[in-house]
Image 1 (cartoon, rainbow, N blue to C red):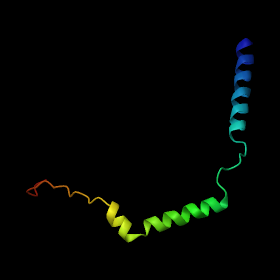
Image 2 (image 1 turned 45 degrees about the horizontal axis):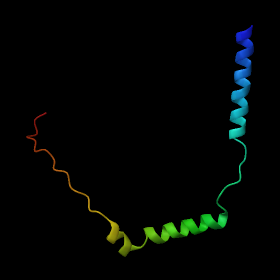
Image 3 (image 1 turned 135 degrees about the vertical axis):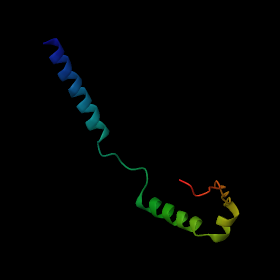
Image 4 (image 1 turned 60 degrees about the vertical axis):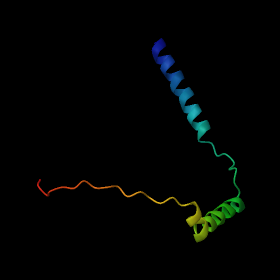
Length: 70
């Protein structure tokens, strides 16, 4: 009987913690901040000169020479 009581208490505590974690919290960003963030991302990712300046060329991997036999 003690185990059942303890199990019920633990389940209630877990449900309470879960419900508290899902509570609607105020977001740190306002819609204006989100719009500014998106526009700055678009500005950086479409600036061709900046992209060429910060880009690092990919090294080509050498493939093994095979004779075609399976």
